[in-house]
Length: 142
Image 1 (tube, rainbow, N blue to C red):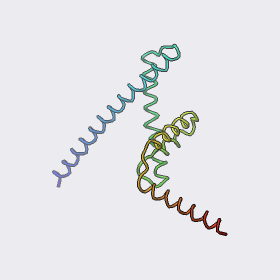
Image 2 (image 1 turned 60 degrees about the vertical axis):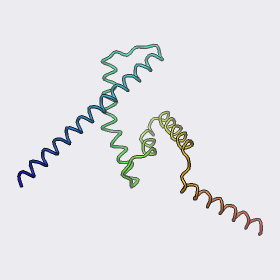
Image 3 (image 1 turned 180 degrees about the vertical axis):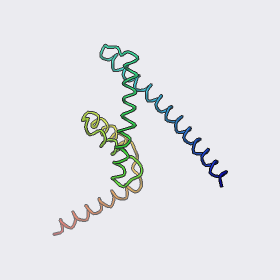
């Protein structure tokens, strides 16, 4: 019994280490992206960003993303009765920043326009068209 318990403890420790490694990798990639964005924006405006400031900005952004944004997204999905976060949750999370919200909506609408309609959506659309045509004919007959 104790051997099984020790084995499950080791397995849990291994999973925690893997999660820590994934979190560290995610943090590093996030940090590199944030620093790159900060430097790019500074360059556009004829400014420079010192390394400690860029690191601080990236750390604050990561902390915000992990502590606030991720929790909000999870709550929005849960409130909608879903286990997965979708684009509407992300847009809702950005509601305090009008420019960001508008950019996200535009981006999502662009993706939806490029996406081919599924067969299910086509069937629904054709049923609506059939009903509209039928009701128009009935109105014309009256």
